[in-house]
Length: 165
Image (cartoon, rainbow, N blue to C red; front, side, top):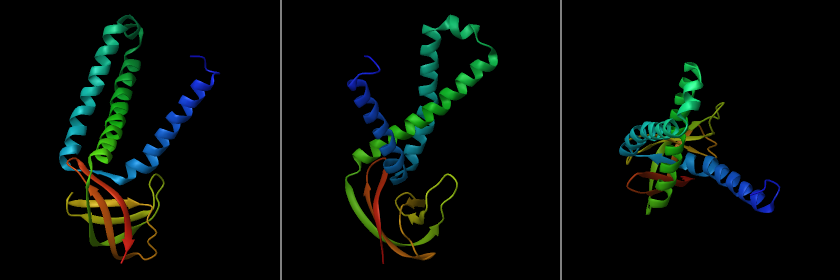
């Protein structure tokens, strides 16, 4: 496919839109259950090892010509990339498999925007047994009560939104 064709341009725009939607909509709203975290921690290195073995089998002579530091960089990059791919994949699976709607009232604490995080609120989720950060809520008060609306599934929850009480 030529890089100056409309087919390539449309595909590229759709790919970028998908990545933007994943990063800004799905990842902040999907929260893993402990079993899903373990699945991600186990399958990410396995995915990296499988990719590295495939690279070794198909491009052995190129890999042997590289310096040991370059090979180490390749291994670390594969581990990081496989972690990102598995978390994105599991977040989409959580979004697609979460079908049980529920809501609960809980106290919240306002969380300011950090250098690499969004502003929102911290709430304790009883299903996950941990504090979760819900991004994009307009909490004017530093503390208070909020109703959390979520979709639950076998691998985690997907937060739909919050309503101040």
